[in-house]
Length: 106
View (cartoon, rainbow, N blue to C red):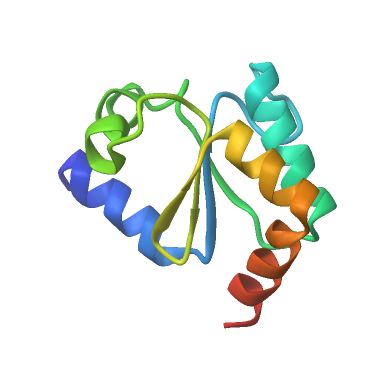
């Protein structure tokens, strides 16, 4: 499977996908760690993550797929939400909780 198809399958196959550096238990950068913490605080149970450090092809091609240059990248229902800063802003506004709840209920 071509890498772009693999990324598409990940994004479409899970209601919540975080492409990050490391894993939720062992994040390898502060931005990824904060994004995971925000999602957990928002009640994300079904958080699916992809460790881009273990998948160099995904790491190299995801910015082209999403038109977003940095990691982490959060997708809800196949739609790019953004990176760490946007995720934290959505948490502070209470919007992330609603978005996560909707994503998990569908």
